Length: 255
Image 1 (cartoon, rainbow, N blue to C red):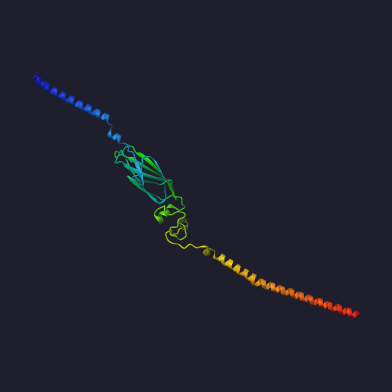
Image 2: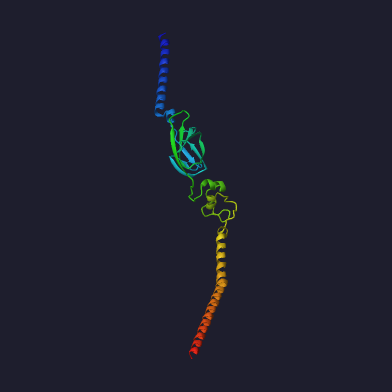
């Protein structure tokens, strides 16, 4: 009877030892491995500007032109299903917030923009943030033509320059931009004669008057002057003859 009473106790001790060993082993395993929730509380960020081939892991500075649409995409190598928030701040005190892995944004005003990419784990752990600083210029390629105007007419900023003449009308694309005319449609360009015809007419009139004076008026005036001189000489001769006649008569009277 005593042996039968001790058997349940022995079985209980064996079960206790087995459960204790399993608990100790499990505790050791958990202690040696990182906690899953803790390990994924912060997601790293890698983002791309303009395409997936250009991956950037740190902060980024870019210079772009106006009215150009840019696409940004973000991913996390540590947390594939991370949640992303894009915050766009401008120097005009305006803020735009977009949620998701991608961002399409157009820069319409010249100035400085700050884009902050924030990643959080689905569990809502600590946030990781990257910064993109964007400087928007009116004329990125510095050819004197605003980028928005080049894209409007040509679809790109590389076709038109300050010396190119896309429609062959004599107006450069820079002059077309300054005049706000269509650089792809022939426009008549006034030449020297169109702009200074009045000066040419004035020169012709002066030339005609000068020729008339030299070849018509002046010879006639010279002829008239000579005739007047000859008349004066003839008159002087007549006067001299008259005086000589008086002298001769006076001498005869004395005789």
